[in-house]
Length: 591
Image (tube, rainbow, N blue to C red; front, top):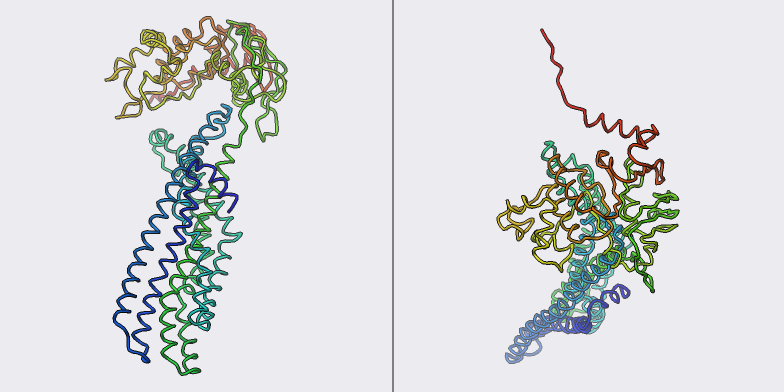
């Protein structure tokens, strides 16, 4: 617990003193909360003590003290919660802020292996978990620590024999609680967090796939991963609940069963001493005070559970952000040209067993276009993403203008490279702001020019607010092809000398593909281009085609040269031609 608290305290900033203050005030609150029971006991003692006549003034005084200490306890607890909430809000905010600072410095390849749903769940939800722990459960830590001592004092001050009887349910309940919160409980907490994380990730993917589900008239069961994650969570929770059904029931009975121990002991004491008044007065006190013992034990159980969740949340946050950002050279070099050269490049993904790129070498002269073709999984996308340094190569070098990209400042590298992917990302803001991400330091005249060059004019004109239309609000959405053209406008505005295209027309309709091809022609004019081709017709006129197979170059040459070789590319071309000529027909039978 101490280690986790130290980590959380580091996020408190100038509010570090608030948490200890909250614990202190909470301790005072718990003491104040016990005083009314003592004063009520004093009132009862005055009324039942037959040896002396009761004093009305004393009873009134005890009554007012009982009311005052009860109200004081509530006020102090409210103050303790206020202090803990102020500290918790600062921790929650700073955890999200620090996590996002680390996330934006991650290698771009990090986002290929971590979905947006998973990142959101870990950062947002786990920060909320720590808030709940600090704001609501931490003030009870003082009660958990203080109550055993207060209990011992009360036990032996009022009647040590009844006090010892109280220890029987207290110790029994604590033993059961420790067994529930031990190894199996911690194991469940990890499984629980894993299941929530998996469900959140799959839910995001399912929502994104709803159009496909509806088009093909399927149900949630057609989205296998999402359905399985729900079933897995249900089975795990039911199994855990049934595992602790009997222990928890026993615990509840014991923690609320002090009276079943106290009454027999009181009867024995009365029979032994004959002084029933003192025994009954002390019995009344213990009947009043024992629910406080039960509440404190319950709070300690909730505290342990919340601590387990908080510790797991911090661990998961650290696991997500514990990825080293790509190293930045101390003496960064400038890029002197626009040619791209791969020199004996080897790359293997983290935890992979084989190389995604295996001893690859090729050269793209400045202003030329090279296309990568090959089967899915052959390594095309990996090769393209090594240029803007999504990942660092395992061996060899990727050079731009003769300079290893590892020796270039990342900001400088990004100025030289534009990339357009098949899955376009637009922000939920205006189209103007989406385009200006390419270069915010331009005039409206420049924006209008790239809108025309990217074939976006018809998109802008049909929207009610034109360029100021916000995407994703009031039912305003763009098709995949329209989004791709906006992304191309953004890339044209950036005007980087090197362009990486990753199947930019893979999922567009024929009309949009024609317009996108025109926009790509504008974007790549005079630039060094590395493109991944899905439709082979788009690579017929490039300078060089590299046929990639298992991370290696199987063939290279122009379209005509590769067809003459009658090799891998020629077979791919024949298959592609057959696929585009394929139609759905119906055989007509003549009677």
